[in-house]
Image (cartoon, rainbow, N blue to C red; front, side):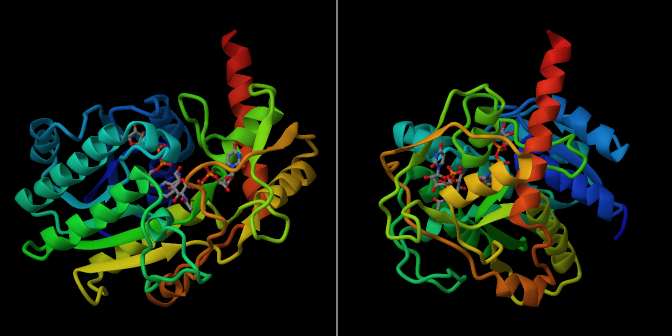
Length: 347
Ligand code: NAD
Ligand code: UD1
């Protein structure tokens, strides 16, 4: 790969930061980030530097601000690709504050696409989500599976986002890949980076690790009467480093001109459906921690079961997952221990 820049939006966030690390480990690209730290902190940039030994500049800019976003492109005329992670992502919160979700996720996307066109950046990767499939009747889900109605405004922003991209790139030269993630979990193998939500976590695994660490009193399993093997919901948990590696492959695929059309979609999952109770069992076994949990009511908006057929990503991007559930749990716990240590040192 040549020495050009990749702009990562949401680079202080969970998947963005891990992807920056994998880009630096595996390519010669320089990476810059734009993140207003709505759900993160610029400490992450220091963590990236500590892990990779490379400096990464973060522009603390709200992507809804077109002028300030354009100024980043103006200052960095050698951007060859954009990976657009920045978005609000909490399903429940999006039900409570839909306007905020549409405003943030859609206007950010429109601005970044506008900049790509204006500054001739022709490679674009979009963070999409399996949530846009909705309540599907056939599993596993592949890219041809018809989309059912979305269950939340968050999921809707991803569905609309994909539509907007398709319509806009129809008239410009931005080659785009949408990557539909299933459930990213875990942290970098060094234990020095992981998921670090600034407020109470919504996702299962940080909730588990914070409960085991005594930060949260108890985990509630949302429902045990679903039509699944143990009654709890089934998801396709995938290690964040595997997700990050897929972005590196997707970027290379676009740069090599291997894409068959200017818009392609790939699922990123392991193909294994795992129940919530199985995740808890794996966490307890791997980390030797006893988790305080109880069974509670189902969470509104949850689908019973979803997991991926990711064979298209294997065939075209040469990508498949390498990391299993035990390592997902182990790395998530390692990261929680790092956070605990840092907290102790501060107090
Ligand atoms: P995250 O919240 O950790 O990271 C997103 C980052 O974007 C945050 O650091 C936030 O501060 C930043 N951001 C948000 N709005 C912004 C704005 N207007 N301007 C500048 N920065 C802004 O989330 P994540 O888990 O890393 O998710 C990254 C992407 O992947 C999101 O688009 C999310 O919807 C998508 N995704 C996540 C999951 C998941 O379970 N984590 C699953 C599927 C898809
Ligand atoms: C959802 C979306 C995903 C989206 C992500 C962003 C679906 C199918 N997936 O993931 O695409 O990008 O949100 O946040 O819509 N659980 C508990 N107790 C808890 C927390 C979670 O039992 O305290 C259960 C949930 O019911 C679910 C599983 O754990 O079955 C995973 O939940 P979570 O981590 O929140 O992710 P999803 O909702 O699956």
